[in-house]
Image 1 (cartoon, helix red, strand yellow):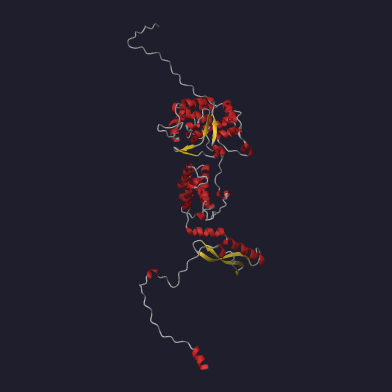
Image 2 (image 1 turned 90 degrees about the vertical axis):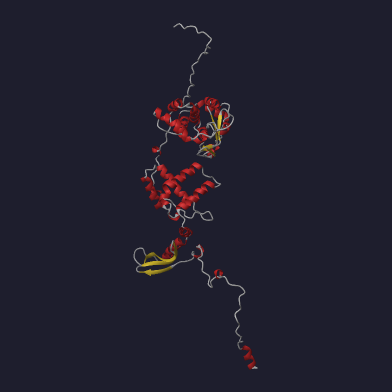
Length: 449
């Protein structure tokens, strides 16, 4: 019996089998290696949040050894000082533990991890600026006006990208901004221009977000460290005109442009709003501002408050009606092809030659807008709410928000007539009367002197 059990427990001896023949030729290119190549997993904050590091003594210092992510080097072990072992600055065990936790938390934070990932992705300031400009143009919420985009692109091309274009977006910081400001000051740019350029840098950096919409590189800008020149309102170039100067300009300008500048000085419209007026916007006594024009293209006005009604003085309304004549549609001020006039052409061909001839400092359309505000504010009894409404400005407090002057059309027209326009309208040209020319068959009586 024991022999039978032993035989049953003995290992079975199998005869060697011949290898099976394949029915197809293997493709060496598609055969994976026996040991798959390990792929590096992405950075995960969860795998780092619990590490505490190791406290060691090196010389007379307690130091912390911990593994951290270093841009360009991967995850390596580094050593950080905690405190002296003895003497001034030494800490007890609990205090050292707290200090270790602070150091570890800094390098395990989400913000630090995002900076490491961004550095390894190689995103430069120039690449981010391209994405930012595209988003400003195509976004649904408050798309930027074309003139603003042109100005921002000019700042990038001429001042920012030559200096910061190749720099990683993660490394653009207060030190970079300070050096850029020094370069801009060396170019002789005005403080307001430097302020605008720095704003573009801040917007580009803030536009870098992750898939959740959170900023990748939140930055606290230090104005004192950057040391950009402060804008002094007293030194800014804000030309304006006096009523006597407006009268002289209107008398000297050519007849084709006279109505345009009369309307500009009498309403204070922005240049784009003035050139964007169509005949349908004029009802005989007031103008509805519904659009603006830039480079012959119609667009929305500057702000929501720019949508408004501007009441005209009766004499100005009469002149505008005569200027329009029998036309029923189209732009009020247009070319022979019906397109709106260009701002630069009007200034270069009409206004600036007249200013030079009269000895008046060169200015643009906005000087007439400043004149209108100065006149209404200081020389008339026009209510401030109505003045802000006519000029398209927003209110500053709840009192302005509750102001419903726009709904009282009768009062607005009464005030527009009583406050006047602040300048003299050009007198119509005196055409001498000429008698009938006699035919050749008629005989003329001799004139006795």
